[in-house]
Image (cartoon, rainbow, N blue to C red; front, side, top):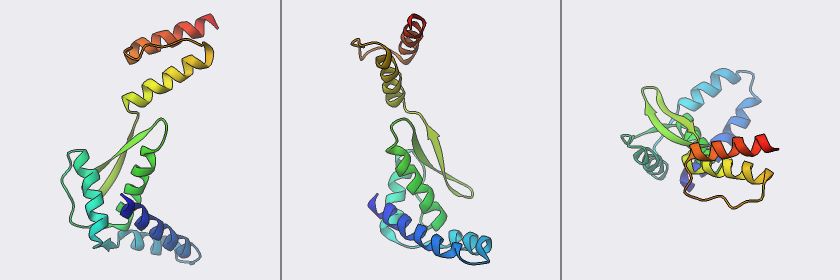
Length: 138
């Protein structure tokens, strides 16, 4: 995964340099379509794809690397997560809220209003009902 982040940082730096060019749009699009043969980056991207049951790739564009970087960044988010998916035009990201993060978020919102121990085995629906009850009392 470090390989993806390193490659993403290099690509972002290159994009910053392109921004100063008067032919910005043309250069950005052609730059993002360039392909890499960096095996460590392709291997790391294939790990992300396999996690989602996707077929591996043999080459990726710089734009695909930036998408993979965003997936890794989203996985660090306290609420959202993301998965890397393969599509006809390359790689894409699907954003979602994992159940454990959603459960944690609802529990934190409840605890903001009342100081109670919340059982860990409650379903998301039960947590939402509890949250509604807490909000009615407040």
